Length: 121
Image 1: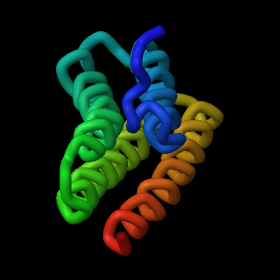
Image 2: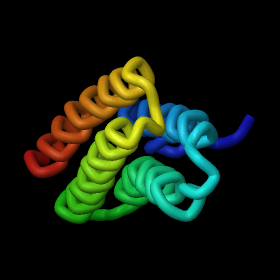
Image 3: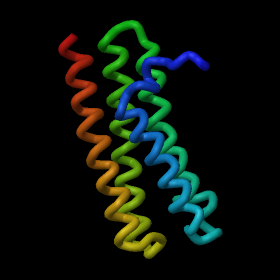
Image 4: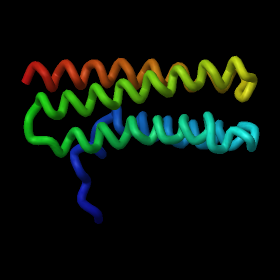
């Protein structure tokens, strides 16, 4: 059995990893001319959320950990902006948009709580 790192136990990291899969499945349906536009941007920003959560857990000070949590939150807001644009361009339907938006809200609440705990410890 492989060793489980601390970030792998965080529900916010698990949720953000699930968001990555959801975004990849969604962007598969985007127009091919968006391959290097919104598709690429959305995928990179979403992966950045999970990656920054993971990287932050390896930092030694709580201030440093909180910094990476803040970066993850910023990437999450980038994803929100991009799905709003994608919806307005009719690259995704209302149901898919609302599903992703609900996941973003859940993750944002968890990131805020994580950051607060990092700064108070």
